[in-house]
Image (cartoon, rainbow, N blue to C red; front, side, top):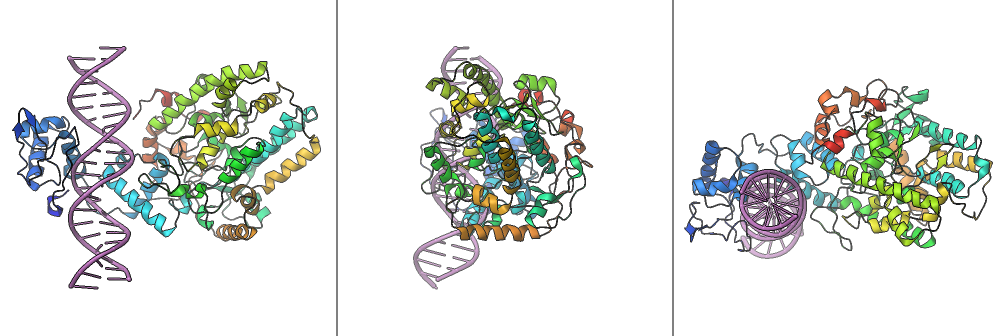
Length: 592
DNA sequence: AAGGCTATCAACCGCGGCGAG
DNA sequence: ACTCGCCGCGGTTGATAGCCT
């Protein structure tokens, strides 16, 4: 604290160990050694203490904070000295309030990093982690109070439930072991899906959602500012749907169309995923109800997810730690690979490949960024993959899944759907699907994830290794029609609101309200956002060192700070997977 | 003017990572 | 392999200022 602004010493209970009991008498700041032990003063710093500390740093440099007491006689513990120096005395500290640009960047960084204040501070020169933390916590309170979304609308990636159809259709078909789908039928389905996905190939690096022009047309909107680049020449309109447009849907629980790119170039400034989306098959009645309860509806915990706060504790919920757009359940490896060892290529192909080692070996690609968190996740996913190997072997042998197998395979969240030698992940984000909406806990609640995602017999059937008796037969043509229908209808706002966003039992009036809001939003002409395009692959345009970095921070730092809506776009064609740096950077990178 | 409430800020606390011994 | 100390980080607390009623 600046001595000028000193608010008087506070009485600190002498419970701390690192900093010994306070000698809180408004002393000169000079330590008094008693029986070989140096007491540490607590409370606000005086200008005299500041001067002593600065003088010490000038002489000896930073670090060795515990030696400050020793050499300078300052009656402060090392931790206190470090804090004082870092937050107030070190040079180049900005004392002014945050600028709008800085605020914007804080939000972006938080959406990427979560409560990693120190990391965030490293991207904001002159700002301290404490400053940012205070700002954020204040902001959260303010937003909470105002009932506003935590992140600005354009910072929100949106997800529309496409997986549901994939899950419901492909998986169910496979589950039923419908042989009639072989011989081109599957191909049609997959091709249809691929072109559908290709039509939405643009990835917003600025966390906005791309809605294909065709889709917009189907919604009755005239596409605007469509890019003509991209695979198949599909045009897209940069449209942003944010929960901000959903009254009562405030927060960051959003629905994101899972483009291939998002899986590949995914930015951890993540995506909220409808728990239904990630749910790859019809759940049991119980679990379905559970899921339903976790689907978006006003007042749900999912909605309140946006209001998590590092320090706030929502009534009736467990403490939440991670940001809404970030989630520990997001496994970055799985994002790249699906969860089943599938890796997406930028040309829209889905490749079946091996575990991470294969992945890194075959490809030069990696995430554009990495972080300790990311690495953790990669490691985790590697472990998961290994587990998967074993587990899949088990499941291939027998459909009799033991509880132990269930637990084992449940780590995988893997649903293999072999389609003519290729595989389609039922839910690339499925791993986190539930957890993403699991706002009631800061912890990735794997147990619930297991509960939802692990139906071993289904998994086995998906792999074509167990002929699970079908409960209903779906004809190929029906399936195709339904798939096509769902593909193009499920992304309609009213549909996804009705089925994905809002609980089916939700008041239709509310749906309508939200739909209107979306219509209003889409009617706007959002400024060209930072999608990648064929013409200018942002990633490729990044400095080489950034591309090669293993640290997400570096990449984030390379992002434009003052251009929340950069014009660069990305496309499948222009930014080949192979251009990506090696994923080895991730696993080899040192944490922090 | 007084009291209550909220925002802001500084500082403390506990914990975990890491390296040295 | 283990312990210990240092350091940094994130969460939390508490004082004060300012606003509102």
